[in-house]
Length: 399
Image 1: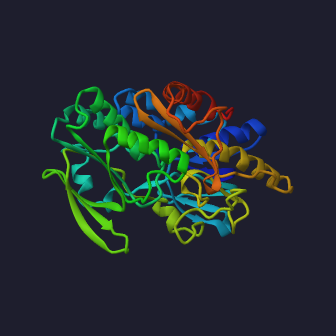
Image 2: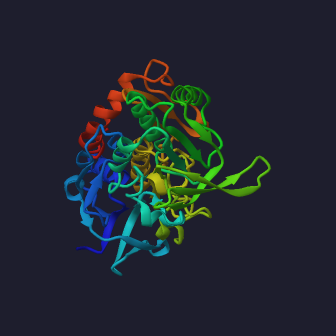
């Protein structure tokens, strides 16, 4: 295997694979390698539906080999450190690879260890999450065991998270499930979030509040989960009051859906590519690194202040491709990323609000109707159209 590559991509997820595919569609003679340790590739947006009992977990998993574009070299190792002054990456095996151009798209890191006791109890004692392939089916199992008089908690951390709406989506499905099974008002559903609002964009927030009231969901803002005792069904939250004073609050649960704190991967945070917050430091419009001209960032690990979603990646990749090819040709970079992100907010079975927005929370909707209203058609889009689009178009560089 060659140690030097014209284009080296860190990460074989949505961003890395679609970037390689689009680059090759533009110029078939490019020489590209992807550093990715996992032999499995996941369609993560469906894990909410798996947790709601309406999607098979196995349909979200394919082999990594099956999605690597033809002609791309797959280096099955994990990136460990960067030496951008030497145009070099070192992997966990100690091997070094050099490049002419680097695309950094390793995804986001889930910090389960930052919640005391979580790792020991996750997947049992009613402690679940849809942020892991290993536990994505467990929320529905927990849901089916809920009884009158019991409590289901749904948490959201104070950090950036991938798919910021996902902590709520599974909650609305749970509330709708309880309603359909005669348990609304008998079992308690609570959203316990470190955030201060239900959603940052007014029109979407208003519609979500209608659902919160319709289902009788109790809201707890400025509550950050810090510890969990599975066997004793106790969750501890750090609560910040209006004056900024913090104190600890314990809540009982029979089921708790946990969203862990997230960050850029450790090997990014400790690298010369990171900004002070640990993210790959890029220009938010061109996606080019602010200090290393031959480096670009994509997806959840980079610093642009957009929503960390697959829909954002779909809009970022064509911009990055256009700009990288222009850079190769010694031309000005024409691509400009708008900050677009999309959050398909599942608010019940057969009901979905398709939130679409860019930088500064400006709505950027696709369809000629008010997307803030829950619709069955948008549910069908998420359930059937988007998974097909992902496997058949996005990863192949044609969407």
